[in-house]
Amino acid sequence: MLRHTFVTLAAATAIASAFAAGPAPQPTSPTNPLGGKAAPAAKAGQAREISWAELVPKDWDPMKAYKDIDLSKLDDADPKANELLMKMQKVSDNAPSNPALNGVEVKIPGFIVPLEENKGEVTEFLLVPYFGACIHTPPPPANQILHVKPQQGAKFRAMDTVWVTGKLETVRNDSMMGVSGYSMSAQSVTKYNGGAK
Image (cartoon, rainbow, N blue to C red; front, side, top):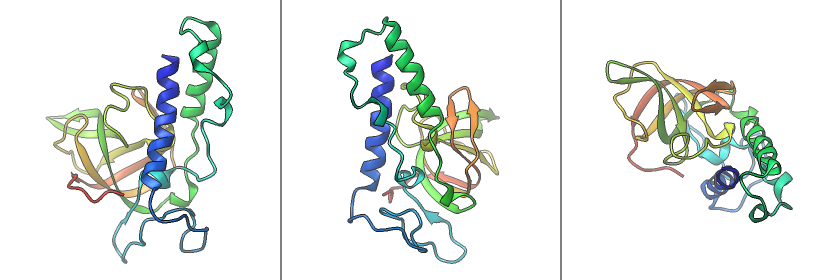
C-alpha cells in the first residue's frame, strides 16, 4: 500500500508535468498569472479551457520530503512504512489549490467518479485526470480532483470521459472517494471528443 500511494503521488506529479509539456515556460504576467504554459485566453462570454497542470501551483512539489527515502527497503508491515503512508496521505489531502483560478469560468476534460445518482443520472461526481483514480488506485492529490454538481443530471457512468464547464471555486470537500481541492456547479457535462492539452 505504501509503494502504491508513493507511486500515485509520483504519477500525479508526472501527469501534471506531462499536461504542461509543450512550448517553453513563460514568466508570470497580468495576462498569464499562473506562469508556465497557460491555456489561451477565453473569448468574452466563453469558458477558458484549462489543463490539469494549471490546477497545481507551480511551486508545489509533493515529492520534496521523500526524495531521500528508499522505498525498496521498507516492508508494508513495517511501522515506519505505515507512518510514512499516513504522512504521504496528509500531503496528498492537503495539496494546495491554485488561487488564481478561484471564480474563473473553465472547461476541463477528465474522468467521472460518481458520488450520487438519481434515476440513472449522475447528480454529483468527482472529476479526475486519469482512468482508475479513486476507484482502482488511491485518489490523486486534492489539487487534481474537482467536486462537481451538474445543474442537470448527466447520463454518464463511472470512468466515462467528459468535458465539464462551469465556475471553478477553490473549495475543499471530503467525500468517501477522496478529498477535492476544487468545486464546481457545472453548467454543462458533455462527452469528451478530444482537444485536451
